[in-house]
Image 1 (cartoon, rainbow, N blue to C red):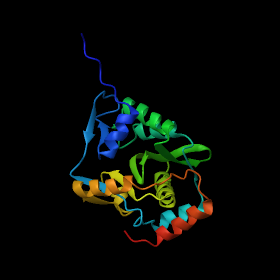
Image 2 (cartoon, rainbow, N blue to C red):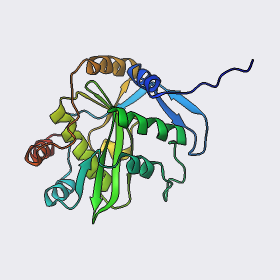
Image 3 (cartoon, rainbow, N blue to C red):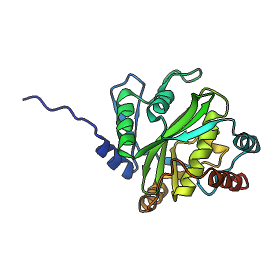
Image 4 (cartoon, helix red, strand yellow):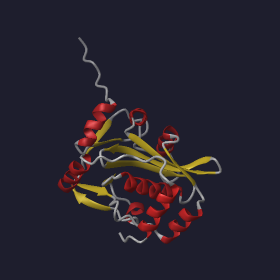
Amino acid sequence: MSARPFILTPDLLLRAYRLGLFPMAESRESSTLHWLDPDMRGVLPLNGFHIPRRLMRTLRAGRFTVTADEDFTATITGCAAAREGRPETWINREIERLFIDLHRMGFAHSVESWLGGELVGGLYGVALGGAFFGESMFSTVADASKVALAHLVARLRLGGYTLLDTQFITGHLLRFGAREVPRGTYHTMLAEALEEPARFPAAPDPAALMREFETMRKEVP
């Protein structure tokens, strides 16, 4: 009798996130997933997120139309697409399938930046309790992903979240106040955040969003 193939389900994926694990594939076409729980974890403090002056001008000007959960599928597809300087991606077909399912279940969310009716940037992640696990972002126009990130943080603050997990640290995230914490510290932060009754506000009051931006502009990373 042949063994039945193991199928990763959205429920199993959520269990992994609760344990501090997250999946990555070696390439877009890879059929194998690797589970990671790094020694040092990237986090972006929600009460220490700093909006640079130039980005604040862009937010005030309203150059981009920003939505949340408007087109999750197109956003994860954009994150998975090969681009100049990044010919390969860790988002394979299975990850894409699983996260689309999680979105339908209400656990995965996207923030989209639009320009002239075209999706030009965005990000997506998983929400559990008061923790948001940021997965990936993309941009085809300057500042589109930065604007999406600022909108994500403002929504998380308004929704009562306490942890924004970035998995790893990049130079792009460092300028906003991201930092690394040891695995043990992260697991403690995660356990506490999972107990928080947060709610992802897909369409908050625009005035409330702007107040959050103005507050974050004054915060120093």
